[in-house]
Image (cartoon, rainbow, N blue to C red; front, side):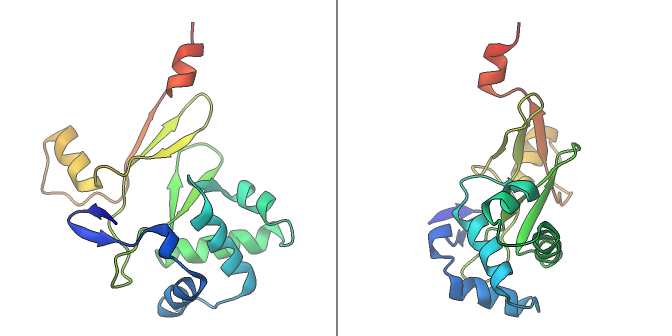
Length: 157
């Protein structure tokens, strides 16, 4: 079990189909086979995925069906949407506490050359802002660090 802000977080392996359906019902999101498959895809992913990546993994569904589901999940905090400022948005399953509530978000790193997005789970948004800016009286909602990943740094002249 990981700790974030000293609250126990559910490991992704414990996000079973039954628990995912419960989260949707609690959030008043209609449970469908397509939506369950989208969430299962995000739970299984080792990193945030774009809409296009999810659509490629689930070719049995129309891309617009997948996008509508992702949009509804993001509005309900079941899924986190990560905006990079580029054309693609990334999506990842939210971290959940054992009481079923969404846990605080974590920061991300985006490589501006290759487009890779990585989770920075070791520190919360609040801790990141406090460390980087010395400010502790604000409540951040998102933090994206942009730069060059190790591979792209080595490829750069």
